[in-house]
Length: 368
Image 1 (cartoon, rainbow, N blue to C red):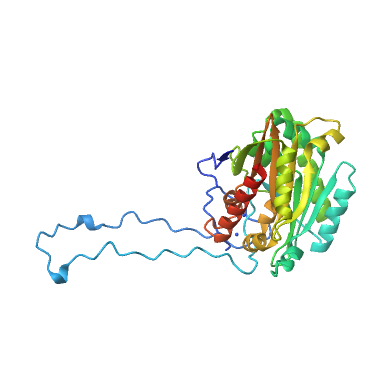
Image 2 (cartoon, rainbow, N blue to C red):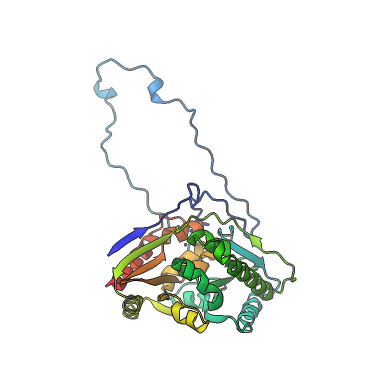
């Protein structure tokens, strides 16, 4: 079994909760609901004189002038903690489009669901009420709902060109109510997919069609005028950035089944969906190498991240992708640190290490 982890390929770019300002140097658009100014980090003072400018002391040291001990242990700064209450939305994560709704949260969700279910080309895979899941875990999260839906006729060519695209498919639409009552609908635009997975102009037509369909759904959900343009954030994402990959012998089906068994045996995990992308491709009259995606989550770990950065819900629940490649299988998932940076969450918080360790263990179990 081999493992690779791809970090940012862009020198100044940095993705799951203090407004926990992260270290991402890429510019993020201000969220439509926010009016709070961004904090400015004070520049480091490089002009202060140092001790090396003082003349050397050549006198023998006395007891009163003995140098201070330098071997004494210093206290380690405690790891930062996530906020226990929801924070206002202050940034729009890179690679997303957003619209501010003219309707209430409940009406926006209902309109989005109706728009998806009313389109014969789309299939609603999951309707996730993150607030209800948080409540079940004994936590409180403001209204947050995520829709997962897809169209195999458009998604299959993307995965046929680059199978890793499956980790960002099917499409997602996130609906959140900010602390001031503003309701925002957001989604990943296809430029983000193309950049992250190295998609070429060979699928430009499909990407353009997907972008148009997502905007139409957003307009329907928010009851916005037909000519409304979305609020865009910068994309700035490197190819294969934030993907953790393990290779193991066997088939995609065998590896996915091992993961499903591990999820079923863990009382903290909930299976959200299992998607057979190859079977969906066949239903659309297309061929695709065996690719299976499993979506699962743990609200006790995911909710604290959403309290710190509401937009991180678009990258939750967790996903694991299985791509059959000859006599082996590629097992892929999102690096929690990448997700944290995308949503301006401090990467030193303990819960990220817990999530990373859990995902690593599950990928090992899936690899057999």
